[in-house]
Structure formats: C-alpha cells, structure tokens
Image 1 (cartoon, rainbow, N blue to C red):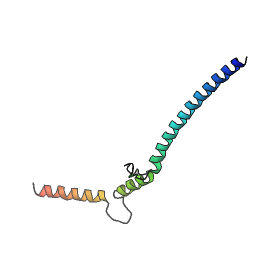
Image 2: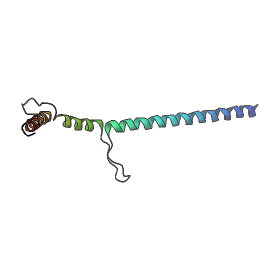
Image 3: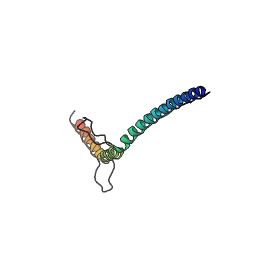
Length: 101
C-alpha cells in the first residue's frame, strides 16, 4: 500500500513540477513582452559595453515631432510659418516663369 501511495505521490509531484515550470515559462515570456513595451514607452539609455544604442521614449519622440510641426503651425504673433514661406517662394517662381519663358 505504501508503494502505491509513493507512486501516486511521485506522479503528482512530477505533474505539479511540469505544470509549475510551464507556468514559470509563460510568466517569463509575458514579462519579456511587458519589458519591451516599457522600454518603448520610457526609453533606454545607450549601453556602450554591449554596443546597444539609446532608445528614446515616447515623450522624447513626441517632443521632436512637435518641434518639427511647430514650424508649420502659425504661432499667433504674425510671423510667417514654413508653409507660408514655401507658398511665397512658389508664387515668386510662378511670377518669374511667367515673365521669363
């Protein structure tokens, strides 16, 4: 009878260990995915020892986009925007081409 109990106990222990290892593996995979999302949102400093470049976070990327597009939006002070300057140059070119065919 004790042999039967030991056999059942060892089978249950093996099943529990296998299930536990699977759960641990899935947890690690999920953690890696969350780490990748975290790195994309927050950013990562460069690691010269490993040769990894800096990964800028979402806030830094958005700041660059806002700086680039700020030239296209009027600032409210009456200063011409980049789009206004492009249109003025195009008008000058069109006028020049009409006068000098």
